[in-house]
Amino acid sequence: MILRSQIVSDLSLKIEKISQQTSNVKAYVLTSSDGAALPEFTAGAHIDVMVDLEDGSTDKRSYSLASDPKDTSAYTLGILREVAGKGGSAFMHDKLVEGAVIEASNPKNHFPLDDEAEDNLLIAGGIGVTPILAMARSLSASGAKFNMHYAARAPEEMAFKADVEAVCGENGHLYFDGGDPAKGINLKELLSNRQGGLHLFVCGPAGLIEAVRTMATEQGWPENTVHYEVFKPAELDGEDTELEVVLTETGETITVPADQTILDVMLDKGMDIDYDCKMGICGLCAVKVVGGEPDHRDFVLTEDEREDEKLFCPCISRAKGGSITLES
Image (cartoon, rainbow, N blue to C red; front, side, top):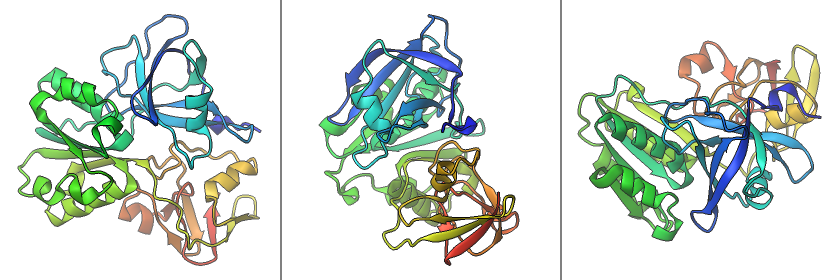
């Protein structure tokens, strides 16, 4: 079954070019299948792409746009092949060839630049470079102040390295940590002595986001100046246990295995719930908790939304007890 919330068909895109960026990252240049101009987008935006999964089902996956926001002739995606993923990246890497046509959504942006920023500090880790590169392109074109710091394991594992160097010039700073974050970006040094008007934008794995947010807090950065997007959520906790979830609208109780999310089980059962990122960064799937103690793991809800409005992201969060009741 394909649910309404799983279907995206705003755009029909032709794969114009595929290039190997690293051993496990490919770049895809997409054009409109009818040759028309593509919808405009802003730096930090992504599109949802329909993919065929290994189990035979169809779903959507979100991929950030790395290209110049002013260029409506083509979009560029950078896609990491996830070895432990559910098949979306495997479909993109293994099944698609140049000339193929895919269905996608119009661009949408949960991670935009801030018009109030007088200066911009961009931090990227791994494949999180894609929206950050688009930001660098936009800032460079407008003459805005920015510096970009980009970390990868090694030069040959740094996707879009040449693009970053060309766009950023002396404002680009590359780090090769060999897999040891301690040998990469010195966050304490980078985030200390913040000047007024400086905003921070970071994208990458959950561990990088948490490290940057923690250090920014320690260094006194105002919360509204720290912007982030997670490109790979934290792994499911190995100590997670099976959950019982009561849904008040139907009165149904569903069982959520330790290795699945609440949202995935709801979708498997044919429940039509709005969602987008599946990583706790967009908030589209948020529902109200009416019973039980939530274990919030999202990156989007504020403390007021969690405590006062009782909102909860079933795509990533769980319960501290054995059950939780949701208004859904």
